[in-house]
Length: 489
Image (cartoon, rainbow, N blue to C red; front, side):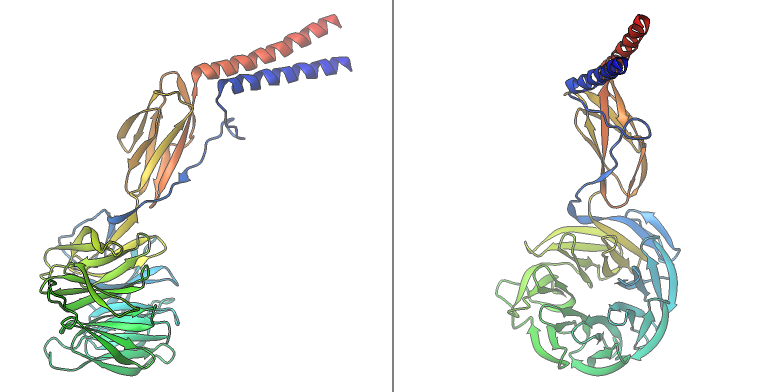
């Protein structure tokens, strides 16, 4: 019995010696079940918001995807115009104005998965959450096609006015509102807003408006629709319960001394961050107009850009206005507008003829249709993507090296960071002299719209030798002790 107790005491002594050696060194080891060493997994860091950059370009006419802001020499007879996101299936629906088709784009695979036949010259598209269908305004054929997003087949064709141009859904009434532009060849004709019931699939009302309504948008803060009248200097406010105009915002009446004369309003959108509406006026200079949804005060807040579309980005809370040269031949883009400062944060150049814009909450990207280039630009407003390497176990000034994607950084004790586009990258790490690397075990990292931090654990070879020596010494003591006991017995 004494012999067993003595042996246990010796083993305890060996363990104490080993642990004491490690603790005295001031460095800890990480243990797991497989290799005797644990490495910390990749950790996602907080993304910083930026006005954005183009991460990829989807070429619709040949169904390919290119990295970054790629340009095409032809549009392949495809003219993407309107775009809308479908939260039911996560797809993007893009109208092709040159044909009678709508492209269904899967943002995960970056591919067109279906082309749906609709009416002539489809120009706009909107989602109806009450019936989970997509509504397409067909400018050429004067009707609205209803697409079942489960089958991507047209289930209804609803007559509208002349030249359906824009759509907006009213969650208060459950109706879809269609702004009918009219005909370019007959500027004297009357124009109207068609009201479609998603319950009956029929047009239930027609609201007369001044000539050439361009864009219609819903204001959830007061429940009204706002329509820009491009051929005049008006924005009309529509009560959707009564289906009539209840207020006209006249740019002439609201003209302030010292400000430019305002006319030709085009795009209009709602800013949920402050609850106001924002519109672009084109002539004689481009201006951004704010309409306070509570006081109904119209204010010129900034010089704008020549644009025909707008959208709100919840990630950075900027409004994005499309920049589209009137001749359609020059490169266009978007302007990120900060409504807190009433100033433009950045201009981003894209393809030719930007026409439509939509936000995808699944991947956090803004998508812009380039009607002349035949492409779809995907804009990220967080990042840029960053791989960071954070070392531990190094003394001050210990110089180590890391290489990612052919780029090498030499670092004195601190962290190293690499800004890269989406992709999977191999990396190599060279420890400082007198150190070895314990982890990570993997030698590659994947970026998919985020920032990752790789923890690199080093240990001094002198410390490791001391730990090993301490452990061997403890084992030797046990062996010697047991040998002496055996001889005595």
